[in-house]
Image 1 (tube, rainbow, N blue to C red):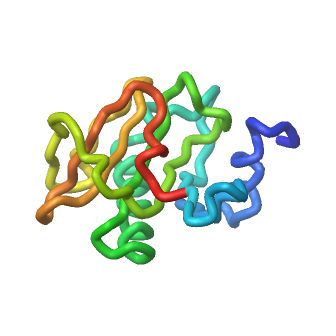
Image 2: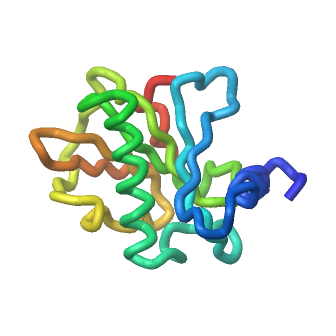
Image 3: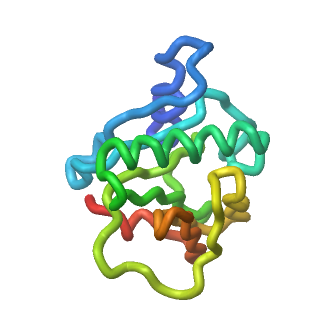
Length: 148
């Protein structure tokens, strides 16, 4: 866990085993407004979201959304980068303020975190609109829609 791709695994290991969701300020100096949200549990390989149960994924999305609301009110965004650009093996979500004017395309509109689909290797970003959640699927990089 001393190698860079394993650093988030090392971070979650600092927490007691009963902690299910881990929050860390992004250590990248260029991203001072970001929080990383991670499941405490490890899965094999690249810790893909599909390796976690629906309940675990729902808990992760819910925790990230709640952190976004706490930090940014109704201007939050949550992003998950695609498999092709992830530099960390441990599953994690990026939380910050959604940038103005980034809404594009036809998002999937869902009522709750339990309805957020699996990314299937792609990037995704989620934000609130009118009491619902807009889920956007992107090619690989989603965190660019968030305030650094």
